[in-house]
Amino acid sequence: MKVLVADDDADLRDLIAFTLTQAGYLVIKAGDGPTALKRFEDESPDLIVLDINMPGLSGFQVCEAIRRRSRVPVMMLTVRGEEEDLVRALGLGADDYLNKPFSPRTLLARIKALLLDQSALRGVGNIYADESLWRAKIHPMRIAAKLSPNESRKLRKALREILHEAIALRGSSISDFLDVEGRPGEYQRRHRAYGREAKPCYRCKAPIRRAIVAGRSSYFCPKCQLAPESAKRAAKRRKRVTPRHRAAS
Image (cartoon, rainbow, N blue to C red):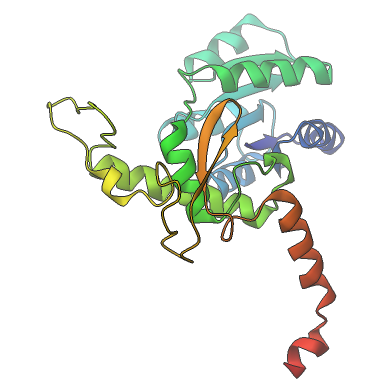
C-alpha cells in the first residue's frame, strides 16, 4: 500500500514515514500543499495523511482539490482540537481526523481501520490479483513490504490495466456470473494465470502452477514469477555483473 504523508513539520513527517515504512507501507512525502497535490497526481497513493496547517495550500484546500477527482481515503492531522476544524474537514470529504500529538500505535491503528473500511477501499479478488501478479511478473508469495519501488509501480500499473480490461468485458464468468443486464462476462477468455493449472504459460510455456496463499488458491508461472528465494538469488547474480562485464559481453 502506498501512503502520501503531507506535513510541513519535517521531523514529524519523517517520524510518520518511518513508522509507516516499518509497518510495510510504501511512503511518499510532501512538505507543503502544492507539493502534496503534485505527489498525489504523480503517485496515485492508496491513502493520504494530510496536515491542516501547511504553506502554499492548507490541508483543507488540498483535501477539497483531491475530492474533486478521487475517493482515496484521507486522514487529517492538526494540533488544534477545535470542533469547527473537525466539522470542516469531514464536510470536505476527509475520512478521519487525528489530533497531534499522537502515538505511532494510534496512527497505525487508524490507518489500518481506514484501509479495512470497504466504503473507502475494496480488494480486487483472486482472479484479478492473480492476473495482475502474472502481468507484473511477481510471485504471489512475495511479501508486499519487500517489493522494490519499481516492482510496486509495475504491479500498480498491471492492476489498473487488468481492471480496466475486465470492466470493458463485463468481468469474468467462471460459473454462473452475469452482469447487471443479465449478460455473462467475457474476460475469462483472456486469463493468463487464474484457473490455468498445468497449462502452458503464455510468455514462456512453463506449466502454470497452483499454490495456497492466505487460505486461497493462487495461480502463477514458476519461471516468469520467481519465488522469493529465487528472486533474491537472481538479484544477487545481477549485482555481481559489473559494468565492465556488461561492456565485454
